[in-house]
Image 1 (cartoon, helix red, strand yellow):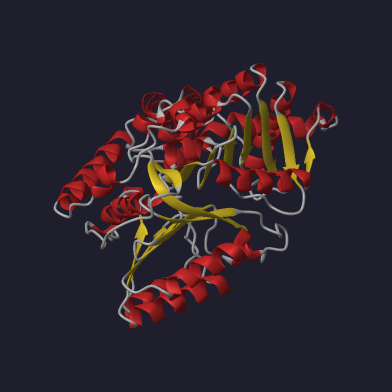
Image 2 (cartoon, rainbow, N blue to C red):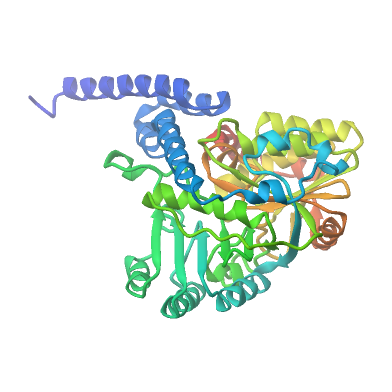
Length: 479
């Protein structure tokens, strides 16, 4: 065959367009939202030579095969746990039946796979130093088991400090289990994990799928951040392990983030979430610990573990339920404000009901395309009466929701399609006036350091910038 013949290039282009049509049909049948399907199908149909490879990496997937495999692994894990008599706390711990604020979240008992439990103690950890000081102090006191899960672990000063602490505890006879996301921690050298293994720490990467083809898979990331020490003290929130979370990134510093320290029955749920992910990665169960008793008073908490294998779109439905339940206020902070149509409509309806709706987003981008799409959504939100703010001192990474006077939620979930439908996330829902007051004071301080976005900001935006924002928004469902 003459590879320099124009006929060859014609056949090649025809083949690429044929593959593009096949891929577009695949997207229409497999992408879970209409917006995402259109965002993939249109460019695959018209410009396949630019979009086939990105679709292979970011979009092409055996979504339902993955769901089936993950659900099967979860079922096997729960069968293995059945012999452990793991859930006495469901019967013994007080539930939220008598809480009017929790009752307003009518879907939550069925939406969440784990129950809302009383008698928990929670502590707000504002920013990296408070968070990692508390985590390191808890691990220092560990006697039996330490469970550590992060989306990102860097081999930098903070990462090395965690590594040395875990090695020291393993040498003392503590069982240490570490799980990190393979995509999020792509820069983590193998020597980091090997040193931990040599020291007796069990460490594994969370991989989305097994097999050669899925080596390019970057969806279904495990975005959860969980630490549990001896079944007595736990931590979840927005921080990963890296110097930037302590302000070590000059362009994004100071980094603004939030974590929560927890003790009480809800730690069983955090351990169960970790066990599901660990079982997926290793087909083994980690040790799970329940204390003999808990205090008789405390905070109502529900751990909301969500992911792409859920029977419902747990994460997005939680945001919808929280917003629809609000009668006085909904305050949200998120680094990525790319809501889907349902969540955006819920926010607009809340404004029409007279609810004080505020959203705090960053003023500095860490991902420029996401930032551009988020900016356009922010301008549209302002026109709908939603108060939008940009945090000024540094990069805002916290994920917090405050509803009315009692309900707050802090965790790993962003206000975007990836958290709604592609990532594994975990959020701690709390129902308590005292803790909500602490969250309110924290957010008031954040809003005081923010600049409110106005309608004039949209009009003052250059035409080319507006074009870039609209292009970014077109692909926002697949970001």
